[in-house]
Image (cartoon, rainbow, N blue to C red; front, side, top):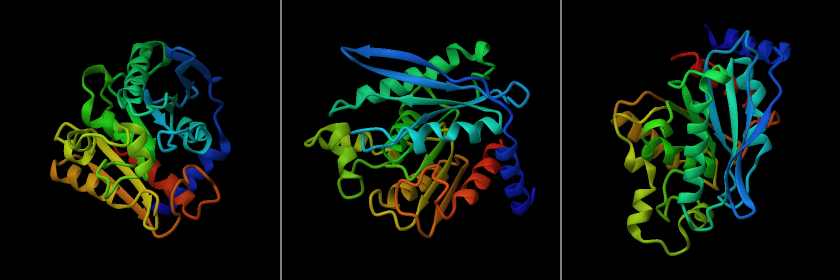
Length: 265
């Protein structure tokens, strides 16, 4: 389908809006008064494809941008027949295992309910923005078995934990302020890409000064080097954190390109 026609198609899909099922929340685990939860948005059965995506909002591992990097994506994916599972993960406070475990449990939960929710357990992806992108790439490169995603969608992701490249707030919150060099290397996820890493869609703005483009470029290059199907889309402006905001200059173009990518495999 030509880009212009695909763009019109996406806009029509968003406007028509096949009614999705009512979203619901599930608590994954609890530590004292804190807990990780998922909000599940299932598409209308008439358009459901059996595909699902676990969405990890960003926020520097200090807070979560639950709306424009989380819940607002549900309608878009729903129109494409994709179930949207938005993860409210716990903050690490220097203990990297906390959000990683939450993300893995979210993926396992989706697969455990696959038959009930009309999901193909071999079509469960992960999406992340900013620090949520680091969480997504961590799971995509480190997790195995029923916690491993089948595809990844990344918006201006933190990828490296190298102090010269990373977003330092995300680095400090994820690993602590004085981590060992081995830990920085372990979670510089471009270094962990293998031929088994799932395919990826990456988007960012070239003028992002919060999470510098080198993060995305290094990850994309590592994927290409390992012959993993990957698509990268760098826009000339927009800075950091645009997410699903309709005011972003390239919003419609992103939706068009992401929809095309999702339908390509």
